[in-house]
Length: 400
Image (cartoon, rainbow, N blue to C red; front, side, top):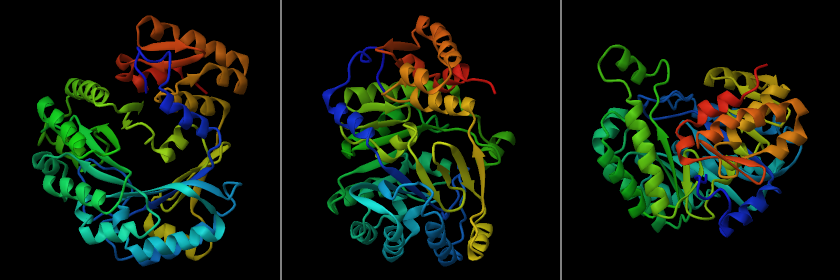
């Protein structure tokens, strides 16, 4: 995402991607609901037991068949294995999933195919096995290059394992690697955060996703804070570390194309950009979400219920048909976070006149406060505005 000094133009290298977006096909997300250990901050759906993995894979194959017509297109440009920890899958299991996908979908020859992985899973042998599958992009959950932070978060891997797995992945031929880092950790000072960022640069990865540590309800982190065992997150320090992040990334030539995402030129996450651009996607697996531009649906958050339902030929999901207000709110929330901004002409074309009037009136205060800029009919957050992205979007929402 651009800051206030660059919203009047886009680097030429961005234009091919912007052009490509207009012709994007659909994406598929596959949720692998298993982890070897629970991280203290995580509220995603997973199980630490692998006993039912084979039953899950059988159910997943049935869901692929049952959902073969959901997207109203067979053309797929991105496949994303998320979780959980998809790197618990063996090479043969990944190939079996692709065999099933290829029966019902046409996956583009240049499709971006991402697999999330933890460093402790990425042995040299495992990386070699992954290189022999269609996976061409690794998303490695490093979170920190400091053992103290990793222990605090209850991560399995060490800082040295994190460094070595990236080096080994590059040696194995992976040319598109993204890593996750977390800031705002109670054990992480500003100087130590700078060190984490510098280590990412030293490893020469193509993409970095950075998230502020948040306290999700009913997680161990939430419990520890409630019991006074550890201090709560310091929002001031989190804001300082986000500002450090933006400065460092800019200095090193990374494009800040979404609030939490930075990349070298031409290494945007195509799959996640599908989400932010409002493209269709199919979610497979327990807790996975799907979107077809008219409605959103989500599978049950239970491995056993997911498996038992699909054994009977039923997909266990809930569905919500989106109202006009919901479609507008989602567009504002996602587009405002990106380098491409919120297009006033799109709002004018897609929604009643009262909606564009509401939006144009609402942005005035943010323009005056230098939290937002307006250029050629699009609004963008400034670096200062990015610190308040969710609040700004919320203030522009329509109330149903």
